[in-house]
Amino acid sequence: MYLDVCMKEEIKQNKVEALAKKLLVAGDSTRLKILCIIFDNKKVCVSEIAKKLDMGVAIVSHHLQSLAKAGFLESNREGKQICYSLLKSRFNTDLKNFICRNKLNKIN
Image (tube, rainbow, N blue to C red; front, side, top):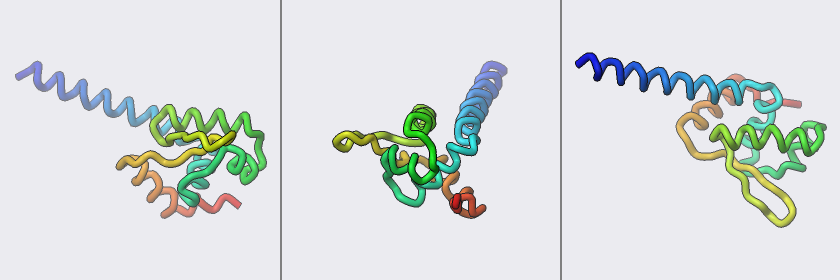
């Protein structure tokens, strides 16, 4: 019985830590802006995001890679371009709803 309780607490702790890491990645203001662009466009290439944010392609690419590694995005090569789209998950859907509800998707 005690072992079961400890295991459940450990699982809860692991889930909390994983959630905290995802929120830390998404909590960056530049990454939130990038997510908003992707929410509005479904799939966007690195150069398009860089242009919309008036930022360099290298820094935008770095942020996109961080979002992809954290499980927010997937990338696809289209010719010479790398394009990103939102991965389907309950967390991503909830984040999108939260951001859109709070009008954070109006970056201009």
